Image 1 (cartoon, rainbow, N blue to C red):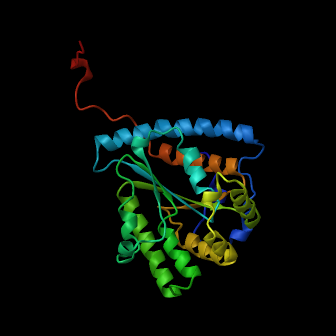
Image 2: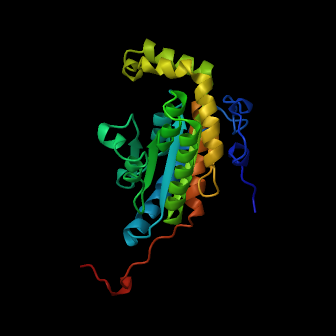
Length: 277
């Protein structure tokens, strides 16, 4: 059996130090931006082919069809939007959905923190991308001091149980932390300010989170180590290079879909008996 090329980037559940992982690393050594883009297009076409099979299997068995949840977390400008666009660019929108999580509404705050999340998990035959996710509830409240260590651990336990429920009911879970350096974030934030067409993406509040960079890194280390389980592993994706980031996540998505061993569903009729005039 071939070794897993992404094993070095998987979080094994033990204590994690993000400072030991270089966000400038290039998992695909010897590549160039042009070769990365060409390979990404090949992978995007493969994702489309496999997603078509996934959708067909979901249509054939709506109650038990396979599904894929891709969770993208990372600091501002790490590339969550760009990753979703690049990896799923060839897919039919019929079987793909992106759910973005902002600050919870008044109604959402009146429920448990996973209530709004469970409502948008993948249906049978669907790929869903979480652009931010339920992990926001063990990051922002921790950094801001809104919850204590006991509540933090309780929420981490709830997340593990929730993801195990999804896994046991047919959802493949792929979680990626887009690991960007503080210097690279500075350049990308400045680029947004300098470009009138992209200035709308900049929010002054982004600088508040940046000022608490080390606190967020620490909160991420705790969350990733505590919730990287056999059913829902985290991968740390070096994200200073956009092309390498996209290539790695596209490769992981293809790997996850191939592991489902998808086949075209068999029709419930004999094609030999059908005559089209």
